[in-house]
Image 1: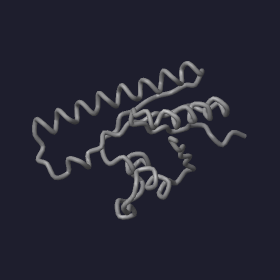
Image 2 (image 1 turned 180 degrees about the vertical axis):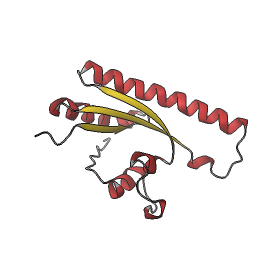
Image 3 (image 1 turned 45 degrees about the vertical axis):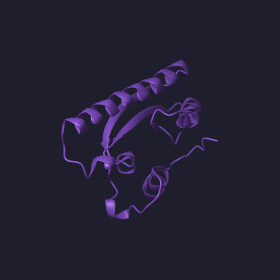
Length: 130
């Protein structure tokens, strides 16, 4: 029995995430799983700024960047015969990646990946970029 039906790939579109994307696609291909690709428009940088035209424009640009990044992963998956769907989320990346089921109070200082590993209710694989 295949324990993996869906595999989540969170991407920021950077070259550093490419290896993780490739590993996720390979895993999905080997276990016949579907990919769910997400990009999180990180709002934490704007917490202390009043909402205005500049903040709205920045959100729009980040959303466009996310659409480009997720589309690239979908295309890579398609070339490997793996089904993928993508979604752009807005919020704090670690919380959105874990689908917001874990309260903010559980998060301490640390990287997004570390927070996801610590709080996710499902198995998480992290791929080192080096």
